[in-house]
Length: 222
Figure 1 (tube, rainbow, N blue to C red):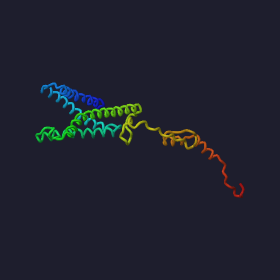
Figure 2: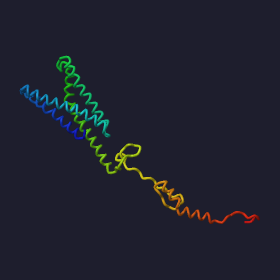
Figure 3: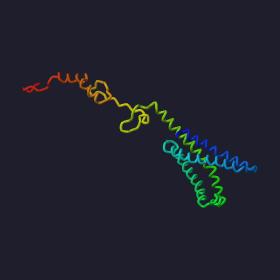
Figure 4: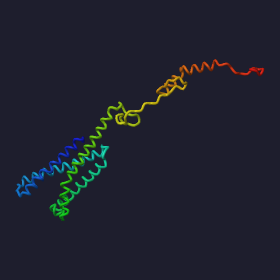
């Protein structure tokens, strides 16, 4: 389910047109086609249609679960493909159950034309959707490759996400010394350990201890 799979499914849509074009051109020129050749060309066209519709549905479902861009467009294409597959299969299943031909089940000419147009366009829409899904997956993988140089080894604590997806972590703000010596530290523990032996703090304590006492004398004079 890589981005190249969508391109292979889109290329498989080419197998649908040539057999039917050959039959259409020969019929337009009123050239007879043997039943063996006609059956073989129809089988090739049917295999191509089945591969494009079923493989395209699976590939689009995978792209919807993993892609981050153009999800609304992918959902729209996927819904169209699902409806197209259902509209193509339901009349054929009903014809098989009732023992009638497909044109008898469809009945009116409008339904026959609608079914024919849907059969000719469904695989083209699927191929376009697969190409769009492939572009979405390529864009997502390219974004991850651009973020990989910023990756940090290991996982983020408490998030369960790799650091390659979370990006670089901001550095902690330095903690200045409370005694005012001008130094700064990366953690509170380092700042507390320095405060015990800070020269500015020790000097301030010495000045406080050497200051003269201002206690009044018994005679009332200082």
